[in-house]
Amino acid sequence: MARKQLNGVVFFVFNPALVGSNLAKTITSESIVLLWFMPFNILATYIIGSILGWILIKCTRAPQHLKGLILGCCSAGNLGNLPIIIIPAVCREKGSPFGAPETCYKYGMAYVSLSMAIGAVYFWSYVYNIVRVSSSKVNNEDNREELPSTMNSAEGTPKFLQGDYTEAPLVCTKTEGIEKVVGFLIGVVPQIRNLMIGGTAPLRVITDSASLLGDAAIPIVSLVVGGNLLRGLKGSGIEVCVIVGIIAVRYIVLPLLGIVIVKGAVRVGMVHSHPLYQFVLLLQYAVPPAMNIGTVTQLFGAGESECSVVMLWTYAVAPVSLTLWSTLFMWLVG
Image (cartoon, rainbow, N blue to C red; front, side, top):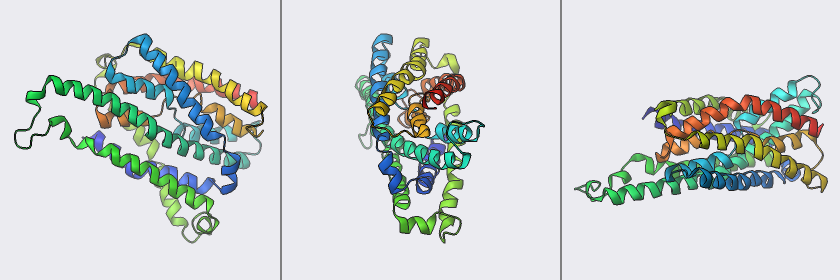
C-alpha cells in the first residue's frame, strides 16, 4: 500500500513538477525549430529496442507476464532523470568539448528537457500499453481457470476487477500529458515566459515552487523501485539469460546502432553540427531502462519483483557502461 501511495505522489505531483518546470525554463520557439530531429531519434530507440526485445523474448521463451517488461526495458530508456544529472556534470568538466560551462548548461538543459518530455510521451503511449496488454492476458487466463471462485456474490463482479489499481494508470496517463502542454506553453509564449521565468518575473514563485517539488522525483522513484524488490534476487524467478540479454541490448547493440544513425544524420545534414546536441542524441541510445517501468508493473501487478531485479542489475552496470560510451561519444562529436 505504501508503494502505491508513493507512486501516486510521484505521478500526480513530483513528475509533473519536474518535467513542467524544466520545459518552461529551457524550451523556446527557436529551440524547437532547431531540435526537430530529436523526436525521430527517440522513436528510433523505441523501434530498434522493441525489435531486439522481441528477438530476446523468442530466444529465451519468456513467460507471458514478462513479455511487456522485456519489451519495455529494451525500448524505453531513462531519457530524463539521468541526462539531467549527466549533462551538468559534463559541462563542469575542465577541457569539455562543449564550450563555456554556462553556455553548455543552458543549451544542454534545453536538449535534456525536450528529451524528457518526448520520452515521457512515447513511454505512456507505448510501454504503458504493452505492459497493460501483457498483464491483461495473464489475468484473463487466471480468470478462466478460477471463474467460479472469482465472482462476488453480491455484485457479480470479478475480484480482480475490484482492486483500486485498475483506474489509477488511466488517470496517470492523462496527468503525464498535462504538464508537458503547460511547460511548452510557458516556454514558447513570450508574454507568459516573461511573467514566470527569470529573477525579476512577477510570478517566478510558481516555477520556483515547481522546481523544488520536481527535485524530489528522482529519489522517490528510486525508493519505489527498491521497495518493489520484495522477494529478493532468487525469489523473483527471472532467468539470468533475460537479464544478460537486456543488458546486452541496452549497453552494446543500441549504442552501436545509435552511432550509425546519428552520425549518418549529421552527414546528410539532418542534424546541425552543435557537438552537445549530437552528444545528447547519442546518449539517448546508451542510457539504462526507464525507471518508470517499475511503477507501471506495480500499477498492473505484473512482473513487479522481476522488474526490480532487472533494474538492480542494469543500473549496477550503468556507471561503467555510461562512462565508456560517454567518453567515446565526446571523442566522436569533438
